[in-house]
Length: 78
Image 1 (cartoon, rainbow, N blue to C red):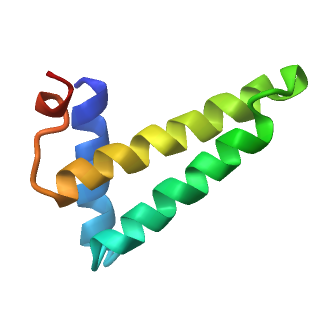
Image 2 (spheres, helix red, strand yellow):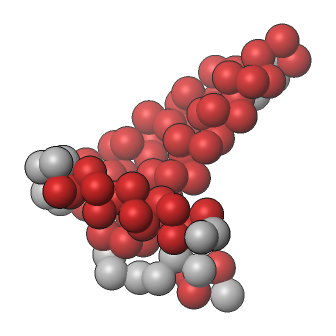
C-alpha cells in the first residue's frame, strides 16, 4: 500500500467513526493551520523532528482535500 492509499484508507476509517469534513472551508482552515505550524518550526534546526511531523500533517490534509473534492491524489500531481 502506498502513501496515498494509506491516507485514503485512514480517511475512510475516520469517516466510519463519524469524523467527516462537512465543508471545504474546514479543510482549507486546517491546511492554513498546518502551514502556520510548519512556519513556526521550519527555521529551527533543533526542531527537525517536529518539522517532519508538521509536514506530514500538512501533506495528510492536502490529500484529504483531494479526496473530499473527489480527485485521485496521485493524478493531481501529474
